[in-house]
Image 1 (tube, rainbow, N blue to C red):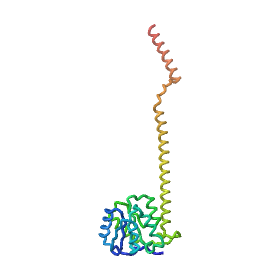
Image 2: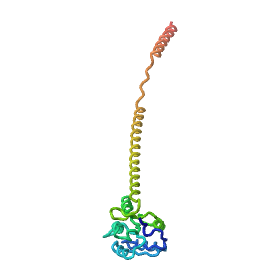
Image 3: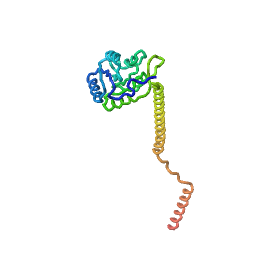
Length: 229
């Protein structure tokens, strides 16, 4: 196992290759890196040009866009990580992309990228990521496929994928529980509303009350008859 080509170096010791087919973005990255006082910055419009120059003079770090034509940044990563590309196979790669989706990040890291940065990119974020790479002591290991990769990255990505899967299942269960609770609440409310909308039944006078009323009527007649006599 061997460390990557930038491990343990200072910021002002590193030789950086930038691969970016957008001239404005290329200029921004070059100016930003020079403001960090790096030893050298080389910029290229295409993967082919960058690869040819890097084979002649291997850099310590490669910063590349993800989407380029005809050769993409991902293809550059796969080319460099092959064991026959030594010493380039040990050069850390930072990706820059405007589409930092989870599948893209997963694909890049599983293939041996050290980090994925999303545009627009602030100078402070780039500086922190480079400093992180300079102190990243994870060794590079040769896989059975013939490509070098970061030690432990596959296991780490599998764990993260399983965690995301568990979180997704928990969210589904939560939504189902909330939906069922809402359905129960609706049924209860509907039953409650029906109960209070029914008209009140007329009160039935009890037998005892009716008998007393009858007696009172007879007494009233007796009194009236007595008075008339």
